[in-house]
View 1 (cartoon, helix red, strand yellow):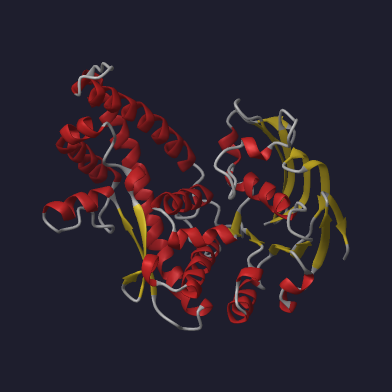
View 2 (spheres, rainbow, N blue to C red):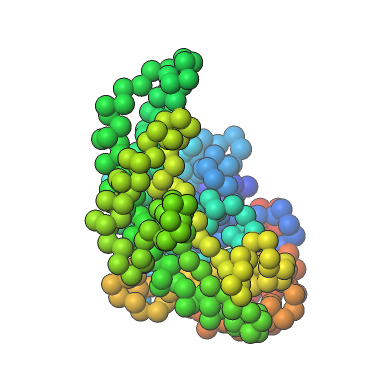
Length: 395
């Protein structure tokens, strides 16, 4: 898969921009703050319907404009497609595919597939569980686009159930608030059903991703340590608090079993949830545990080791998506586009050279760099200079 054309209208700093692209390596070069990342961010948005830099769409629209438009042409083998996304903060976004309106924007997920490396990836190792859950969810949607609906529905149900628990907590404490808890069973059932689908997908994803992470870390770090990942679900933590035994065996965790476990956990935790006014069990409380040599990477790994782990996670995503694992990856015939946003400038020479060697065979690689020397010689290819919002192809 590769992108052949990108056009922006009122996206980030660009009133308008237009660019032809080709397979192989393309480097976007220019000083910081000139708009390089905005270009690759737009391609990443087309792939995930989200930004790797900000949590909401508001910042994606140029100041003074009411909406932004991203147009992309992509090619997968002999098949070509044209995608247009209209981003309007505060309103439902719109999409057109090959000129025709799409009923639901999320139906275009999977048309463009990317794996994006960015300095923000360091937070996957050093940051909070929320970022690691987002990492898992974005990858899940990339390889199984149909899961986007379950994730969106889960967020909606979680908000409704949380609001009900918060009202019940306020009423119990004698402050303002009133809640009819008769509807809580209904929300429990919905949360458990959707949560089981998400948890089952995460368990399967982590199991498939794990060997790729171990190999990628070995290659990026030149054999300095053994990396591993595992999912710590809220069910596991609850069981460990009670008897020390994990609640979920990843090899036997069917959605039906997980749904029953979630319903049982919510039933037992209901008094505590009402007291605290929040949902205490479900995928929104999972974490992806990253371990190096059997110890948590967060808090134990050095800066260089943390970078190696972050790179290994992204390389593992790329390899999972190109492994041809039919039945797991619903788009397994489409090699993702590799995007490296100011990553090489963050790495020491050893990691830079090893990463360049590992990604060199990719079909399309998009790199942003402040100066040409930040791009390893082995990744020489097309170059686009970006200055003050002006995009100019050099070679």
